[in-house]
Length: 392
Image (tube, rainbow, N blue to C red):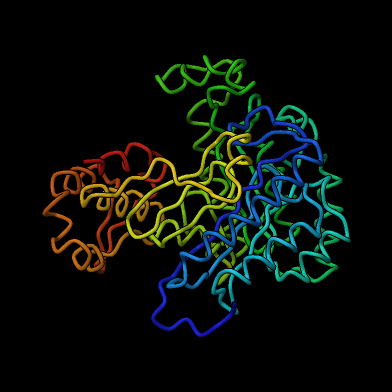
């Protein structure tokens, strides 16, 4: 349903597609390989969930839709089109909604892209991660750089005008000049948006088994054997900002860069505290200050269809709301508005965070200007430390 959304509350939709060809060596997301029959059964259940949740969301209008994973582009194009049709039938979708699908090189083709276009998908997020085939192999990716370039070129020729490229820095054995090579290759393509994340070595992954001790050593101020030193990791981050700024990209969040007007509206909504509804296995939601999620067990999720249950329901108290306002809002380079904080909580930020604000400003981690509080360049480099100061 596409209608005038006056007086309706804004809502973002996230659809989790948990399937992939194989798990990457660094990945701790809820994803797994699955046979086509399982994928088909899952899509049918997801269609049912869309219709069920839509019934309870009549007072909302949907401003963004995001297909994440896993590898959403592993599904057949017609399945993505069916899901979009169900969304439009069940929710009030804005006529100018941003609709994104995550794609992996090696799973895209002309037919799928045509289905995406016809379904109204207007933004692609392509997971390159590195322009080095050696690094891609180390990461356990299913593609090489040549396949990425073919897919990117095909998407452009078919008329996609809003493309994000995902990248990961600070890989094992990676030097600053290796990361610079990847940035140069991607900048030659002039994508509208670049997400550049630093590698996190997460428990339960093959990378943790191999590099877990290295990561702990670095966190404790030691000298890792195979992961880049902390100073090198920071050097890569600063280089990213410098090279992208020279080409007209603006850093609008700690790890995200965009051409003017091409910021990801979906992710920006998360950081601004817009309500979001997660659909599919293990997805999380936050609506009207109430957090809940779906089961992470595939068998249980498929068995619930069509009566899907909310799990881990938590109503956020005022303290939790203030924490989220600060540590999500401060991820944005524009920071948080003092006026919005006061309007929402009937108290000035200093009334709650006076000590932390004074300390962080004194340490040159935060700045206050024109009614806003935001991270400095130094604060961004140690953002985990800074943001932790706002947990009450």
